[in-house]
Image (tube, rainbow, N blue to C red; front, top):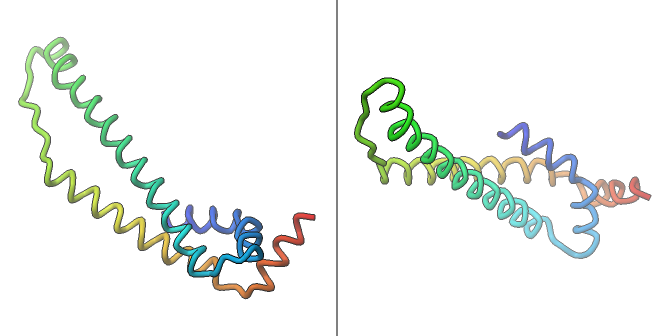
Length: 119
Protein backbone atom coordinates (compact mmCIF):
# COMPACT_ATOMS: atom_id res chain seq x y z
CA UNK A 1 0.00 0.00 0.00
CA UNK A 2 2.86 2.36 0.79
CA UNK A 3 4.48 1.79 -2.60
CA UNK A 4 1.21 2.32 -4.44
CA UNK A 5 0.42 5.49 -2.52
CA UNK A 6 3.95 6.85 -3.02
CA UNK A 7 3.72 6.22 -6.76
CA UNK A 8 0.34 7.94 -6.90
CA UNK A 9 1.72 10.96 -5.04
CA UNK A 10 4.72 11.18 -7.34
CA UNK A 11 2.42 11.04 -10.36
CA UNK A 12 0.43 13.96 -8.92
CA UNK A 13 3.54 16.12 -8.44
CA UNK A 14 2.37 18.76 -10.94
CA UNK A 15 -1.00 19.03 -9.25
CA UNK A 16 0.65 19.52 -5.87
CA UNK A 17 2.99 22.11 -7.33
CA UNK A 18 0.06 24.06 -8.72
CA UNK A 19 -1.79 23.89 -5.41
CA UNK A 20 1.30 25.12 -3.57
CA UNK A 21 1.69 27.92 -6.12
CA UNK A 22 -1.96 28.91 -5.58
CA UNK A 23 -1.36 29.36 -1.86
CA UNK A 24 -1.88 26.05 -0.09
CA UNK A 25 0.66 25.35 2.60
CA UNK A 26 2.43 22.02 2.85
CA UNK A 27 0.42 21.21 5.99
CA UNK A 28 -2.83 21.91 4.15
CA UNK A 29 -1.69 19.72 1.26
CA UNK A 30 -0.77 16.90 3.65
CA UNK A 31 -4.23 17.11 5.24
CA UNK A 32 -5.82 17.06 1.78
CA UNK A 33 -3.90 13.94 0.79
CA UNK A 34 -4.75 12.29 4.11
CA UNK A 35 -8.46 13.09 3.74
CA UNK A 36 -8.54 11.81 0.13
CA UNK A 37 -6.76 8.61 1.10
CA UNK A 38 -9.01 7.94 4.10
CA UNK A 39 -12.13 8.53 1.98
CA UNK A 40 -10.86 6.08 -0.63
CA UNK A 41 -9.98 3.53 2.06
CA UNK A 42 -13.38 3.90 3.72
CA UNK A 43 -15.19 3.48 0.39
CA UNK A 44 -13.07 0.41 -0.41
CA UNK A 45 -13.67 -1.10 3.02
CA UNK A 46 -17.43 -0.58 2.84
CA UNK A 47 -17.62 -2.01 -0.67
CA UNK A 48 -15.44 -4.96 0.30
CA UNK A 49 -17.60 -5.61 3.35
CA UNK A 50 -20.81 -5.50 1.32
CA UNK A 51 -19.47 -7.76 -1.43
CA UNK A 52 -18.00 -10.17 1.13
CA UNK A 53 -21.30 -10.40 2.99
CA UNK A 54 -23.19 -10.97 -0.26
CA UNK A 55 -20.83 -13.73 -1.38
CA UNK A 56 -20.94 -15.42 2.02
CA UNK A 57 -24.75 -15.26 2.05
CA UNK A 58 -24.90 -16.90 -1.38
CA UNK A 59 -22.52 -19.62 -0.26
CA UNK A 60 -24.29 -20.35 3.02
CA UNK A 61 -27.89 -20.11 1.87
CA UNK A 62 -27.75 -21.32 -1.76
CA UNK A 63 -24.58 -23.10 -2.80
CA UNK A 64 -23.99 -25.31 0.24
CA UNK A 65 -27.58 -26.63 0.51
CA UNK A 66 -27.91 -27.21 -3.25
CA UNK A 67 -24.49 -28.65 -3.97
CA UNK A 68 -23.37 -30.30 -0.75
CA UNK A 69 -26.72 -30.87 1.00
CA UNK A 70 -25.63 -29.23 4.22
CA UNK A 71 -25.67 -25.74 5.64
CA UNK A 72 -24.24 -23.79 8.56
CA UNK A 73 -25.18 -20.93 10.79
CA UNK A 74 -24.49 -17.50 9.36
CA UNK A 75 -23.26 -15.03 11.98
CA UNK A 76 -21.50 -11.72 11.53
CA UNK A 77 -18.99 -10.93 14.29
CA UNK A 78 -19.78 -7.21 14.46
CA UNK A 79 -17.08 -6.13 16.87
CA UNK A 80 -14.38 -8.01 14.94
CA UNK A 81 -15.50 -6.45 11.68
CA UNK A 82 -15.51 -3.00 13.30
CA UNK A 83 -12.06 -3.58 14.81
CA UNK A 84 -10.70 -4.68 11.44
CA UNK A 85 -12.21 -1.62 9.77
CA UNK A 86 -10.68 0.72 12.35
CA UNK A 87 -7.28 -1.02 12.13
CA UNK A 88 -7.23 -0.80 8.34
CA UNK A 89 -8.18 2.89 8.42
CA UNK A 90 -5.46 3.61 10.99
CA UNK A 91 -2.87 1.76 8.89
CA UNK A 92 -4.00 3.63 5.80
CA UNK A 93 -3.84 6.97 7.61
CA UNK A 94 -0.33 6.28 8.91
CA UNK A 95 0.83 5.22 5.46
CA UNK A 96 -0.75 8.30 3.84
CA UNK A 97 0.88 10.60 6.40
CA UNK A 98 4.28 9.00 5.84
CA UNK A 99 4.03 8.95 2.04
CA UNK A 100 2.70 12.50 1.76
CA UNK A 101 5.39 13.86 4.09
CA UNK A 102 8.00 12.08 1.99
CA UNK A 103 6.57 13.27 -1.31
CA UNK A 104 6.21 16.88 -0.14
CA UNK A 105 9.63 17.03 1.50
CA UNK A 106 11.17 18.69 -1.58
CA UNK A 107 11.47 22.45 -1.54
CA UNK A 108 8.94 24.78 -3.13
CA UNK A 109 11.32 25.30 -6.06
CA UNK A 110 10.87 21.64 -6.96
CA UNK A 111 7.09 22.05 -6.89
CA UNK A 112 7.26 25.09 -9.18
CA UNK A 113 9.59 23.26 -11.58
CA UNK A 114 7.04 20.45 -11.75
CA UNK A 115 4.38 22.96 -12.80
CA UNK A 116 6.68 24.52 -15.42
CA UNK A 117 7.33 21.08 -16.95
CA UNK A 118 3.67 21.01 -17.91
CA UNK A 119 3.99 24.02 -20.23
